[in-house]
Amino acid sequence: MLTDINLLFDIAQVIFLIPFLYLLNQEIFKRLKKRHSFFSFRLMNSLFFYHLIFGAVYYAYASLNPSDSHRYFSVPQKEGKEWMDFATTGTGFIDFISYPFINYLGFSYEMMMLLFTWMGFMGFVYAYLIFRENIPYKIKVFRKINLLPLILFLPNMHFWTASLGKGAPIFLGLMMFAYAVRKPEQNWQKLLLGSLLVFCIRPHIFLLVAVVAILGILLGKKEIAWKKKLIYTGIITGALLIFKDQILGVVNLGNSQDLISDFLAFTDKRSDSLGQASSGIAMSEYSLFEKFFTFWFRPLFFDAPGFFGVIVSAENLIYLLLVVKLFKRNFFSFIKIAPVKVKMSLLLFLLCSFAMTFVMSNLGIIIRQKTMVMYFLFFVIYYFLAHEQMLKNNPKVRTLQIYHRKAA
Image 1 (tube, rainbow, N blue to C red):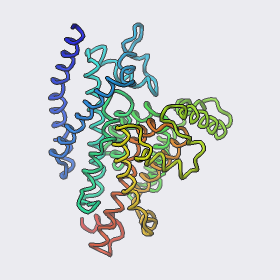
Image 2 (image 1 turned 120 degrees about the vertical axis):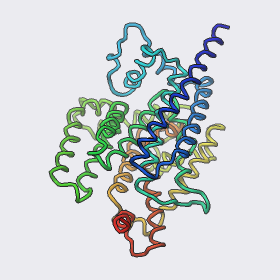
Image 3 (image 1 turned 135 degrees about the vertical axis):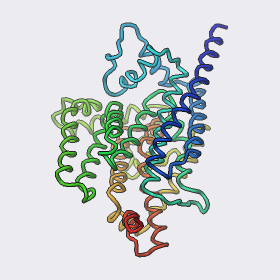
Image 4 (image 1 turned 180 degrees about the vertical axis):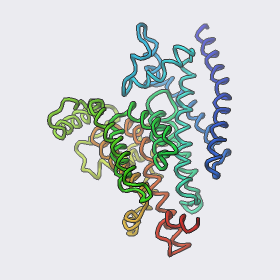
């Protein structure tokens, strides 16, 4: 009886927290509207309530199935632990974020789930800004479907970014970084916060992001003076050198004398251990093409693990159909002349995919992990389709970037 009363009280707290987050959203949206005239309150508010539904779905799922969210709520409450004890990378950083809300503000498990659901939603806000800021055109796919709302409302992307854990903040960090890197001097706070989130949660992903950022800076706009390019490159390179032990430590390579051999040994061991699970697959026996296909598009209906797997399979089919649109001869000529942000997105997506396929042999983990990087692929697809549309309307235009200059 007492347990039921406590649960009702926790749910009541969540109900009161939702209006607060909604009002906070409106203030954030107003600021974004001042910077971006295209910003749609209606679309983002619809996306917010849609994302809340998945927060409720994940909460129900976690009540019936093992979930790391329970661990992330209980660990910060351990006796003898102080806030700064959790100031580390990886799993401990989620405890570091959670600690003050749980121990100082008295957040319940349900409130923490809602808070992290909101973090995941903010990742979608920045994803929306990335697409609309760079591609101000409506693109239709499958004859009548508007592509941007389609990719913003994909269910699997929302499910894994709507709970207490790594998924929501890492997604927010990546999207915030990708949004801010276009104009780093104007968005340095967002660039710093996004970088910190990515580094503190997944240092190895930060390594890939940093490498791609360096390439983007060096190959980027001619308007950026070489002096600034060298400064930006030096800052990123310095950060990598300072934190190399934390980055390599994620894969137990902190004291390695032969990084390549030790990494391959680690990936073999990791892949074998994950392959022992009920949804394990023999990734170590696959060719590189089969590894990529599995990471990007499986499960597909023939190997869907249960009802949830069928839903994920339907979404994976959409991924596959969208990727097929890149299978045109002019895609390679497009990549050659595409803006550096498109090349950076494609490179980051391929690098992350390459790294993850060597350490994952479990469909459940693959389904969850790829939510981090799929939007970089969607950006390339969206930009290419917009490029194709502009060529039909104006054959003299080479890229959307050039079109923007002429239109201006």
